[in-house]
Length: 426
Image (cartoon, rainbow, N blue to C red; front, side, top):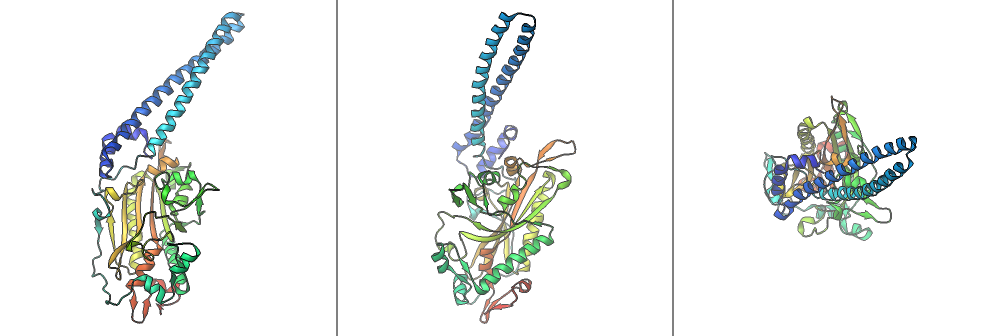
């Protein structure tokens, strides 16, 4: 969430960001509405403060009049105080209403996009930041997509997942389950080597937690909601990990804070359909290892590229062809200032699959979270938050199965063999 002071100081910058994000022109008026409502809030606050000060002054005068035996004058001033209390009560309600309306409007404004965000309407307009320099893997004409490989080698049972839960909830078994567990351990170990503290967080969160990182109200339709308990299944470990620092004031010496966690993730993926969602391409439940950093504002963009290097290194060890794309304004997430996606090449499907997003949210999340630090002058400032997938397993598994298939079976990358305990799936 943007601060009102920032909106006032950078109105043109925010309007330009809304344009890059392809907001309708009619939506631009929300910025003027916020400023106007904040003017009302400030004027009401000033008037209320003046009346309170006047009431305090009168109360002191009343005490002095009683001491002087001037009871009639004191009673008259008591009537004035009563009238002031009624006025301040009305103003207090008006102030509360204006604050609530202002908060509601602020929640509708996305983060300001970084100057490097390219103009565009959809993922087709994303900019390739770094491309695979080698020849992409080529398979024989009879090569199978991962859903057929999963059936051939009894690795994933999609039909049984449908029976137990529904579409989009795959059941891993045999060497498929072992491969899944191996990847989880491998990714966690890589994050541990990079200095991230491992956390096992709760898998359900309350409304304040979901709101703190921006899932509410923007992504409410994508989250699974437990109505009886008023809780949400997490769509990513980013949500509970970042909220560890909600309402926390850090010291500058605490930076950087680096956290990682493996969790199942749940996303409704409402409206998803077609060939692009087959098999593991788009599922409702999947495992993911998340990396999160809390950083000083001066260092957050260096940190962003450090996180890119980490994800890139993991993909290189898996020997998967990848590319990094910078998201355009039309594809940029509501809370993000700058996001890079990692895509791996699926040789059987002949397409790129997104497996990671790495983002800098600057102060957008920390303002909602009230996540601050004390600077060298002992003043509190908002920290910067960043997160990335390192990595999301479903599509990684899909690419590994497809790209490494041979006539003798599916080869396991060397870096994973110590985790799987086998070199080939046959």
